[in-house]
Image (cartoon, rainbow, N blue to C red; front, side):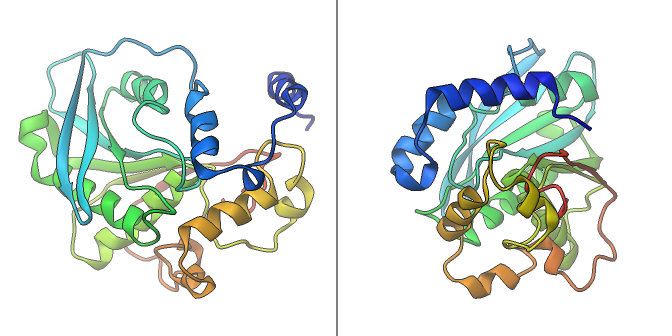
Length: 256
């Protein structure tokens, strides 16, 4: 299948900008570039948006609660943004969370987890698990249905959602009913055809992924931990069903 014409246009625009690769600029510069991009298009209106601060393992963290039109209680999706564990925040994925709220008619709770390299593995994953626990313990306060809590995310956020699903199973809760994994990172630098075929020229590169992993992990051995690399898990029993979305020209395609 040929590359989508809209995707090709984006790649052409980026190539014309002649931007330095992430590994050649500082983390601060890379974050500013990423966060300036408008992901998900124009933001859709939703019935209600509320920012809160909750306690996490490494201190306070922000969440943003999106509520759709209607009476509720609504299903809840705890959403973890992408950005290689290094980039992203509540603003970068605002339009995406709004769209999910309206399309699924559910509450979306976006999590502003602590980022690497300042906070390496397992801190982002533990933050996301703590936020999921908070949602499960506060369903009445946010008009959510305690029996319908899901987790989701894109790219590194998909990695975190898959990790949180394992944590919830291993730690006795909360009970999750679904995973939404959008082109997720699921294994530490696997030698797969999609890395060889798509490692250059399609925005995310193999070099980028090496850079992200080096910032996220304290050492290579942590790449074998199933909370860092969900595909390394020896037992996937008892996990909630998942929708896994992959992209044909993505280096992450095969691990998804």
